[in-house]
Amino acid sequence: MMRERRRLARRYATALGWLAEERNLLDEVERDLELVQSLLDGSEEFGYFLRNEQIAVSERCAFLERVLKDEVQPLTLHFLYLIIRKHRARYLEDIIDAYVEYANERRGILVVRVTTAKELDDMLLETLREGLGKALDAKVRVRSSVDPSLLGGVIVRVGDLLIDGSALTRLNQLGRTLKSAQLN
Image 1 (cartoon, rainbow, N blue to C red):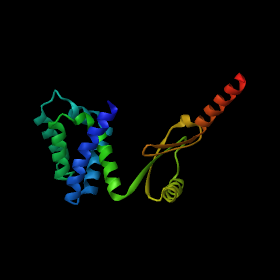
Image 2 (image 1 turned 45 degrees about the vertical axis):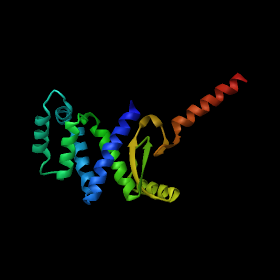
Image 3 (image 1 turned 90 degrees about the vertical axis):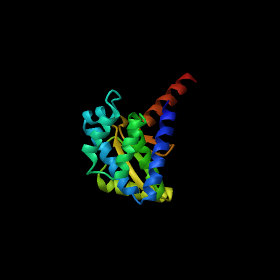
Image 4 (image 1 turned 90 degrees about the horizontal axis):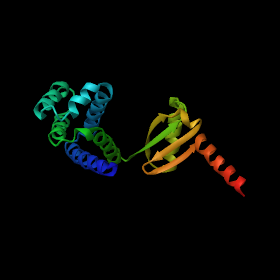
């Protein structure tokens, strides 16, 4: 199910990306979609209205027109209408993520997700970005998140590659080693 959802999101995001590139709007459409994401994150009502299949398509499109017409590119607005008409609004967040990936790929930027136990300051993030950029021989954009359960260390994810240097993982590995040593 998750794989199908990602495939569908990528298909819609790629189509939007092609149109945006053709019109030289790749960055503008990304900003538009980030605005939509922030509305989804900040307002339960916005997401409910957008995704609620009980509300007529025309009403939902009119709602988007009122909220976004002066804020986003016409291409973005028409894309959102299409998403609603095709009953794909429940996939919108996945489509936004896939579009950002597409846009970064087209710009030659590699997105690296970094998870730490504590918030990293700007200077440390910049040092991490530069180091990862050199190690991966690419322009890198770091997306950081915090997970206090890690205790310490860092988890780095680049696409499907996962480098887990967290204290929690190391403690778990140590525990498994000790248990197996006790059995011998």
